[in-house]
Image (cartoon, rainbow, N blue to C red; front, side):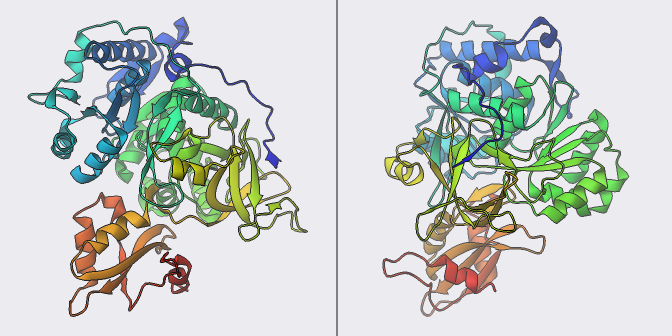
Length: 527
């Protein structure tokens, strides 16, 4: 078993609200917590806490309590922090929904999570209202933050100035958030993360990712994604840093925000690293305030990271995690300049791991002459490991073993100097620009097309070495179908990141005797 190089830390038995806001002192109250570049509005920590309390009080007055699930469909705006933490303040659970989801995808998550309230913004109200109606959520329980006829709005709720009730629950077992993840395979499932899971990961990251109170963080990665939720929103608030929110990524707006607000710390996904390394427009902006860039959510090759770091004169680090780990388990330490940026760094505090031979089940511990172990599946244990999948004891048992080790589905090596490198993927999950895509979900959709007899989906690399979904399609007898037909059909049914971007027609989908798709055979066709 490999251990973290850091000393163990004490994880307090706090709720998320108490951990982030209970320790605010007088010096913190006037510190700026959030900046909205669109309006220039600044929210101090004192004002944010007051808004969180007022929103929690308004929800409690309407019957929201510790057994309620509230869905949050909202881009990165300052109000997200108010709503998210107001819900947690009551002990209710938040299920965060991808802002790009279609009405059908939203409805599926609302129903599966058991959400009885939905919070959104007017630009997303069309699909949100359709989904809410289908899931049985009435209009008076669909809060539109910026206002819409027939719905509660944030300004009115805050104006009530209601005091939230005292709440009592066990942070170790009480579910705080329900992000959705495909795990190692299958369709998206609700990941039950407790208050302790989130508090632990924030404090683990405080040691491993040195974000300070003087930092200004550009919050472009979505807060609805566990990476943005923990590493941007919660970590930045705990460290009393300033968050500059961006509702969506646009390279010019991204660079403009860094320049205008003198952002110092960037949390990004690999596609942004590619832009920083290659796009000529980067040279048109003064982003010299940036001292650190941290990439996660999907694998980033070392060459791109090094090129980007040299170009903008900033330190470049990488980490590893997954929703089921709250999400961080590894990070490159800031003090380790000798560690290759192509690695995902070392285990964060209180986390231990082992590598397991996927053929024999034997633990891999021996390092070779090059300092590396043989590759093996990464298994992880720590206080940040999820409680399990919502209403899916079977999937939970397949992912977390009797010893509490979470089987990640990723293949890694360990170097004698303590760092891990992800070298392959055992799981079927596709990571497109940091977003998870379950092949099974796309395959089910493709099979609903009357002219498709069979289909399979895998991840392949595009010209920028980013993973994209590719469909292998068997056309129904006597039917005619083009690649464009297939891609247009899928695009009309799913969020943009889930679109099939390549299609290959084949005579038969390779399958095992039990009927399981042999994805390795399909990958072999890619050369």
